[in-house]
Image (cartoon, rainbow, N blue to C red):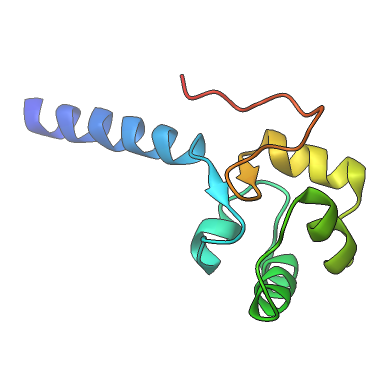
Length: 98
């Protein structure tokens, strides 16, 4: 029983750590992008298709190239852990790992 409890706690801690992880839009795979709250399969596919044309330079470049990601949505995605070139969107509160 002790082993099961320890395994459950370890699984919970691991899942919480993953949820707070920062995901760079230029480096992430499909699964990592899908893990960001606010990104679904369609938006993830659009990001990956645009990224094939070249990496995103900054948040403005991402907003311009991916339909449906505007300033407000970008701020929410940044709060959820999405980054562009290792940077959160200006003006969006950073998601901290607790």
